[in-house]
Length: 54
Image (cartoon, rainbow, N blue to C red; front, side, top):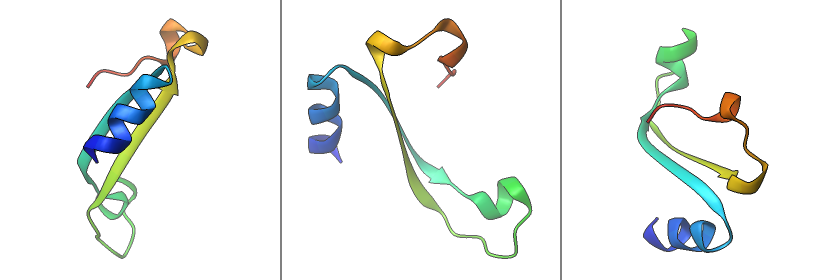
């Protein structure tokens, strides 16, 4: 994960990693599986609307 994050940042991406992403809980789905969520956005193309709080 550290290598992926470092590579993305090197190429100009803002990276957010969440180890507790669970769509079953968020969307009320039948299965609850915890997943890693890697959100990478190219910083040069971001607008203020795209920024999410960590």
